[in-house]
Image 1: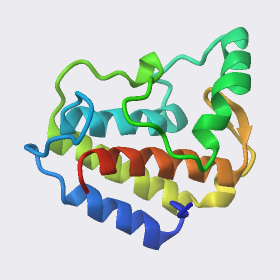
Image 2: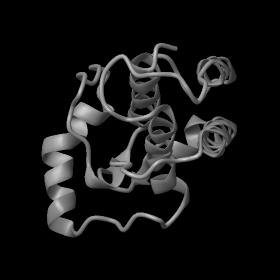
Image 3: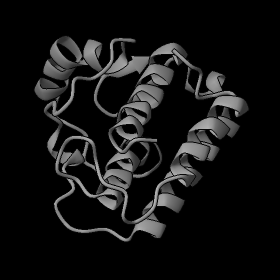
Image 4: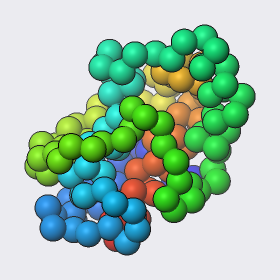
Length: 150
């Protein structure tokens, strides 16, 4: 899996984002390109903001035991997979606003570096290694950028 914490890979992902336009259509799924960008920002919002309430202890236990491995492993996500309610973006979003937010989140994460994330507590899965954080960040971005053909 490529390392999103490196400048080279972050720049590569940002370059893919820059190829998107407000008219870019998905190869699968129903999100608009602006909704997809907002959807990708949710992962970072859970790291950098208090916008999303943390799950209760029972829900966290379920997430850690049932969902975590599929999110932090190197195995790609399937097309049209289920997502957590916080990640569902139903309202239309502004393309340029969401694009800028996502690029800013990617840059901030890269600048903080992988050591900042090693054994950092995640919103839903408890402490993750820097490799698990990388897989979660990169795999999600790659999945949706591929969805939109970039």
